Image 1 (cartoon, helix red, strand yellow):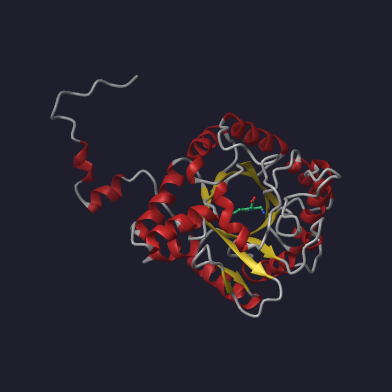
Image 2 (cartoon, helix red, strand yellow; image 1 turned 90 degrees about the vertical axis):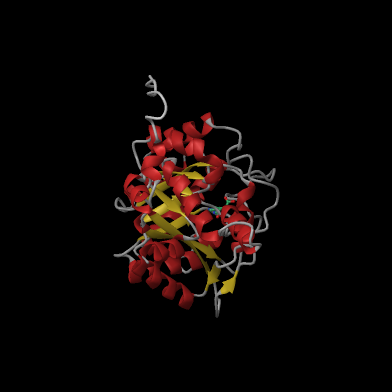
Length: 330
Ligand code: PBG
């Protein structure tokens, strides 16, 4: 029951807002570098890092620039890195994803060796970076994504990533049953310590646009037969419940800022940590508006992160992870 407020002017909420010291003391949401995860793109056979036009400040790394950035991430005290590969060759089944010498598995071995004690090394487990049609799975004769045939590819991809030293597999493909199948395969192979981050509620979003450029994916069609309809809140809760039941160690909501209600639902019901992915389009929007001088860039970044944490995210994947962690430490 809402208490009846005492008569004016006894209730003066401004008392606690009157100075920076007060605001700091009564702040309800605290941001810390440890709760940030940096997504990173590593490009096969790159001599030098390449900028991504629609994501100013983000690069496709060469192995050399990747190593430098990993050291910077460890020094900044962020929670971890989420790795994506940009392979040179793509094919119908995404062969590069399961090749131990494929770029993502090579990058994972480097990260595990060099910063595996300081950071949680995480890998995107999905086929879209590796397929020539750009879908997250393999296609059936009608050209539709075949759920169960895709699970067999994910199983092999999970084993390759675990063997390369990934500590947390980011299951982002939205195939039914993917968490259970991958958990069983890992356990059977002895990888019981490898954890699963389930992109439980991943929506078919326009905000992934710049990511396509980042991994040079030319998607044929769209992902609406496997990613969630943006209007569906209850279905987000169902996906979270299913992934927890299948053995997810952490569940994620993605994108973040347009889905804060789904995130708050997950935070209220999930027995495991709940993360959110502030995706490429969310990044690009703030960068573009700031570049025009239309918003205060740093305030907008911090406000966006604060909103995501306020809604219930225990950690956030964000392309600003390094910048924010370094700035907050100053
Ligand atoms: C799947 C994957 C995607 C993103 C993360 N993992 C692409 C998609 O599902 O369309 C998008 C991340 C972003 O937009 O920042 N490999």
